[in-house]
Figure 1 (tube, one colour):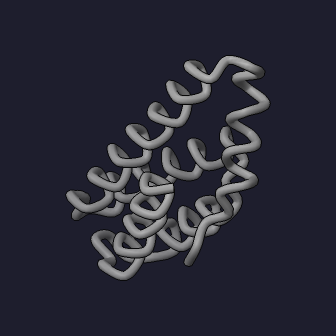
Figure 2 (cartoon, rainbow, N blue to C red; figure 1 turned 90 degrees about the vertical axis):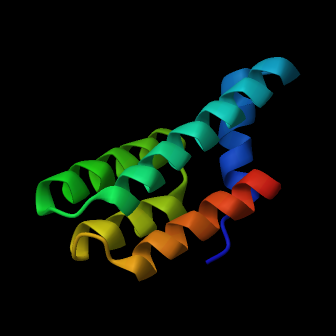
Length: 100
């Protein structure tokens, strides 16, 4: 699933205004937060930990208006703890966004 760089970067740009350093800081903060949630999902084995990580992921996605990531978080919420397909798709989102 390819993410929509334009929409997410536009949200970051709107928050940063004309401050390029702030834009870069916000982008880095998003990537770091997303990486932490992916790690938590990957390590979750019980329903409670999985649900908390998926909800945090969904909150992060919503706060940055990252609709494709919201959909991935919803898939995680519906999946069994440790579902490798969901984790791979979220990791792919992170990888694609990090490289853009």
